[in-house]
Length: 391
Image (cartoon, rainbow, N blue to C red; front, side, top):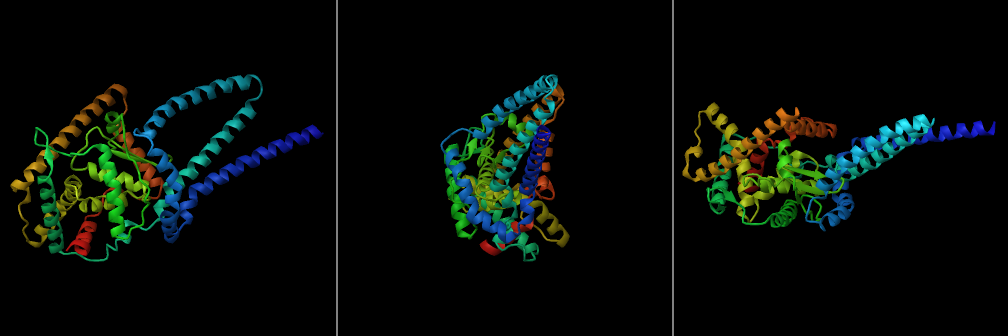
């Protein structure tokens, strides 16, 4: 009788432990939903920099991507775990211990998920609840007419072509940075800290050593050029083609994630604004380039609707070097598209679509309505910034 009671108590303890782990997992998963904006601001401003500091310090000790190595080794480890699990199912089943094995497996999986979810929320998820960049910059309240759009477009155009003239070129006339990857990362950190201080935007002052990814060529098949690893607090950059029109913005974008901004819209908005304030021409070029091409179409439509005219930017001689950069970028991505088609034909798998679907699902799971469309900064934000801080 005592043995039976002991067995029942053991079963009850196991059930309670599983319930506890599931409860903790649910609590961590839904924790951001319980936070209001004020709590999110407090966390991102005062707590996150402390939480992220150990990871930032460890990452700074290595020149290579820890994330990349963990992913490669993790795939091999996971394959080994699956094989081990399948084998042990038969072994334990033959010995009549299948129930105990399944319990221990479930307990381990839940414990790992609790830790992973908790770390994710602390390093990234809770930062979705902070005030947006538009709120922090006090933008979005003003109505704009055609003149505002036209003035902003002209400002962006002049800034773009001026910065482009200051850049070096390769033998094909395509712009390139004169600095090393490491120099770009160091400069981006200083630039972000300085600009955020200028506009009174709370951001972690921890140094974030963004890393180049060795397997960038194959990573490009997914269409992704940068990723922030919230578990290691590491910003990873695709370096297969460091496009002069976008690379500085990408570097700033990923570092901003590691400095406390989770929203893709916020990171793109602040990355572009930071680049505009740069002393280096390559960073300014990418910032103004982004704004000019974001506003050109909508401003042209505005002009047609109101019977107004715009300067003929597209036939101005000053923009021709920009076309060379854009053409080089298009040729690169066309080559990648052909490689992706070959990969899909050979293996029956489209990495570009898979990457986009996974990214979209991840963003929507974190409350970002629109998924990957949140990478797009509304055009009026740039006009707001110009009229509020430049004009």
